[in-house]
Amino acid sequence: MSRNGFAVAGLAIILTSSFTLAACGSSSTTAEAAPDTKAAAPTVVDVAVVKATTAPIEAALEISGTLAPRSRVAVKSKLPGTIEHVLVDIGDAVSVGQTIATIDRREIDAQVDAATAAVAVAKAALDTAEANLSNASLEHDRAKNLFDKGALPRQRLDGAATQFRAATAQRDLATANLAQANATLRRLKEVQRDATVTSPVNGFVVERNYDAGAIPSDKPIVIVADLRQMKLEAGVSELEAGRLKVGMKANISVQAKPGLTFTGELAAIAPEVDERNRHFQIDVRVPNDGRTLLSGMYASARIVEATSASAVVIPKDAVTSRDGKRVVQKVQGDTLAFTEVVEGLSDGGRVQVVKGLAAGDTVLADARKQLAPGSKVRPIESR
Image (cartoon, rainbow, N blue to C red):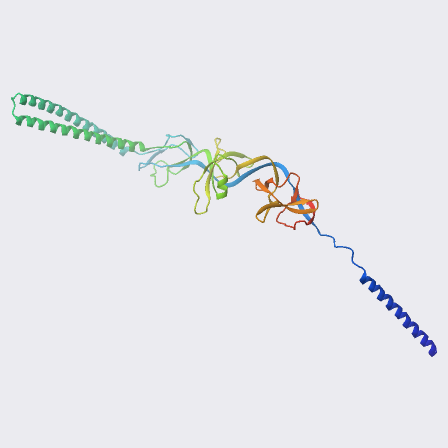
């Protein structure tokens, strides 16, 4: 190629590059100058929600423990000695005054016989003293009459008076001896009666520790329990005790009797707190006429505190505290807002809303997930 040809080609390349740079510069300037008119879309959060419904609700306190008889009495012998007979066995029904066992009483019987004889001797001595006193009284009266007529010296009158006083003292002594002998006889007869061991209560024999021929030690001969009514004892907190009243109904269930529910009531609330655990002792009683319940069975009781037949209820987890108030996070359309509520009864899983919500209102199912007020949400109904 000639020199002129190279010059023309170079000029063309330079011109082409200049136009390209100009075009790029113009495009960049235009892009920088164009404003961003599209705003960022708000974030929408998926949330689980529930609806407030109208339903019956029952506030109750749950307790558990071991069933025990209303009364459980250890029957012991007051008289030391060898057991002669045991007349009952485990499971036998007994009534008040029924003979449980007898103790060998030959020695006490001999003592009673001796005391009876002593009473007879004391009575005879009293009769003799009474006769002597009567005779001394007559002699004293006769001597006084003769003394008044001047037919008897004072010495004889004084002697008659002395005899009268002595006879009176002998009569008083004989009376005291008879009273003492009778007291000894009564005491020995009581001991003699103690040789017959009787049941102090109605119930059933739940424990027997000795047979005939044994000498009782520290253990009772038998234990009698009144199984017609069982009791369930438990400790409750101060707040729980404050809500309870004697007479409240209780539904009792027993692990050993699945599917069965027994009706009882709160029979007692301790008036003083146990300093060891700050609990108040309560006592729930349940009838057991058919002996379906046995002592030692594990049971739970549900004490009904209050009921409402038609209440606005939501799950308990849907309510939380905020700035000292109880609130729910209410969904209105696609927006979230905190709403103050007043709670009523609670059955543990649900809570009654007395004020702040109406049936059909939608709230967050879990109030622990707190979102900012006005947040955009996509409600997903929880089942």
